[in-house]
Length: 469
Image (cartoon, rainbow, N blue to C red):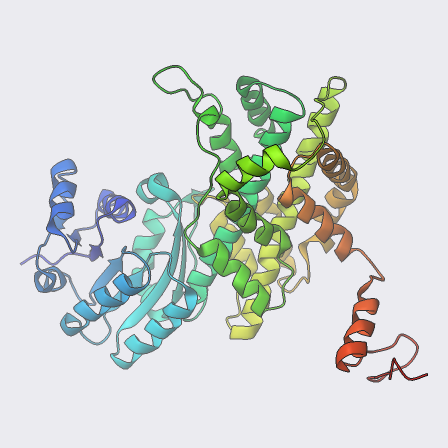
């Protein structure tokens, strides 16, 4: 009896398309879903010769060749744990489970340790690319069992996105490393999307441009430094109309939501003492957007300047906006990769940031041209303390900071909310400040709590009785 190469549990969009992707590369795929209806719908719509449906979990597991390899594409949290508990009794020593969902990395560490006791090899893998990427080639970030990765790599290599024929998949590190990298990827994604949306707002409100003209600007930008997946799709969004001929962008409600990975990134930054302000502000911006009724009320009550659209030197300002966007994007990547480096030290993962940047170059949501530079930077210095200190980004920052400063200043004076741009400017200025105001904070802490302080002029830890005459 024929045994299949891999099994996929979960027939939602990502699970369906990954199954098709694997099958399209010649592998025999067993599929299963908790509710049989979705499995039947999958087969009815995609009657692929290499896909085999099963409706009993035991039959599904037994259909696989050894070592059995099962890819979970179910909701993170309890559903993932329940699915793992369901299949454990049918697995043998050396079999492999891959969690391809957006799981929290600490949950992945717990599952890794649990399955180790059962002698089952576990991989927690970030998978990015959305519906289309899952079908045609996603970026894949596997962590966990290295032995399991070596076994499953031939399949991952074939189904992954390619950049110059190089697969966008690489072993990331032990236990929860893969899902941690995906979490930070999503944090950078939050920042990138917020920066682009603020750029759109500036073009719309300050320059009074039409959707068509904004689309042309994004198209031009996509031919240069700003070339990226998000710029590409944004260009297309501006010209899409509904059945009545209305531009969709103008009638979509301005309330943005998320699935929690951005929040996880920020929480982890706090635990690592990492200044992740541009990503954190991007998460908060979504929370603020959800306060729609309050914002509508506040717009009628709270005062602010009347926006005066720019009439002269529009082309000059558009170029400054492009430079501001690119520098801010670099800062977002800088913060994300700094967090990866910090987590690598804390959890002893030995992350290779050059390889991680390679994974991001194609297939994923944050793929962009600046990643090529990040690959090269980390290739020659995997322990660089900050990407802004690299020669290439240092030169860009020194050249473009004037434009970012002007865009932020003018937007604020016009009353346009730009939390991501402002955070990028704040981080840049804070990072380059030789002597900050934190000395006063240390004095205050020592005054009210005897928390002590250090001095410039001599070594040691000091405390002062501030109220003694």
